[in-house]
Image (cartoon, rainbow, N blue to C red; front, side, top):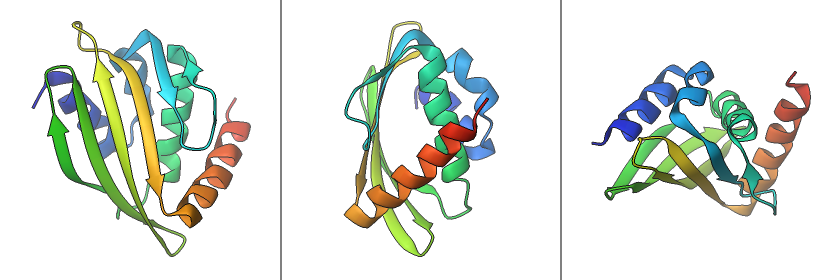
Amino acid sequence: MTQPLDAWHELVRTRDASGLNALLAEDAVFHSPVVHAPQRGRTLVAAYLGAAFKVFSGAEFRYVREIVGDSDAMLEFETGLDGIVVNGVDIIKWNEAGRIVEFKVMLRPLKAIHLIHQKMAAMLQAAP
């Protein structure tokens, strides 16, 4: 496994969003499954990923498959949330310095997308 993925898995395992700034490039971009415009910049991407850590904080969250290249990876995950089985994919791209430059999330089924949208919106609005 590559160093950026090792670091990412450790953050997910510990749900420790404080390490996100060190892992994200200054010009990182986040593609949300529920927001049409890409979210740009380390601060904004860290806010979205930090909120996701809280929304997906249940013990059921797990990665079930990984496809890894030299500078990118696709991580398929599964979890349960409010009685809904959520299946999704994190597509992560990093630069030569090992910092994440792009993070894209895709989700299914539609019920899960609506639920995640509600929970993420509440989490982001509550953030300082």
